[in-house]
Length: 114
Length: 116
Image (cartoon, rainbow over all chains, first blue to last red; front, side):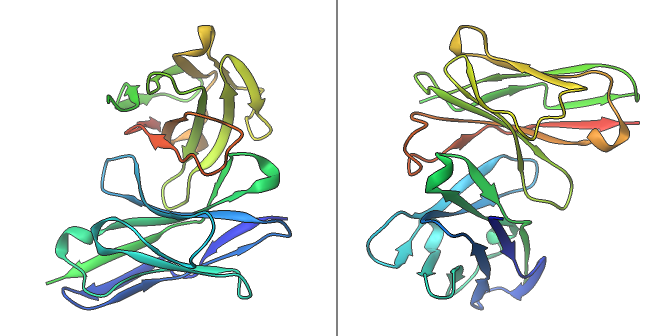
């Protein structure tokens, strides 16, 4: 079965420190990969996506992610976080054999402390 | 461009009552999705429309949930009768093309349903 796993449900981090959010997927077919952010009481906003080409993808708000096909991972990083980065982050996968349907991980809540 | 509009933002109902949610996608977006997001979990796809036809409703609890997209634009999602476990945020999303997985989605702000 195809699935997405976010290994950390909650990540506390101090302001200006780096953060890494882990995402692994299982699939026997090619995939497209996405990271979304959800601020309190808001919908999901796309941070970045990997479709093909360079495995290092840069997104909005200083975030980047690296696709590792051999490890079936798509970890999200930011070198220096701000208080405003406090939110929930979701990794999502679109399996090419399943058309455009997105399958989401369980989410990682990032709490940035001053 | 205007975003995906959803209403109402919040709804509280008693179990066994019925409720309906409305979604207006981005103009011109052929594909519309309804997701259920239970607190502490990632969104789960309930139903996908392409224009006014259903593409995927395999995870829709059809004994109590129904959805329609008349005229291929607005959509409504209905729950009748509601159960306590239906408490969740219901997210609507739209995308321009369904056969290109890289087209990306635009999400609405969601409707938060509380069943008491």
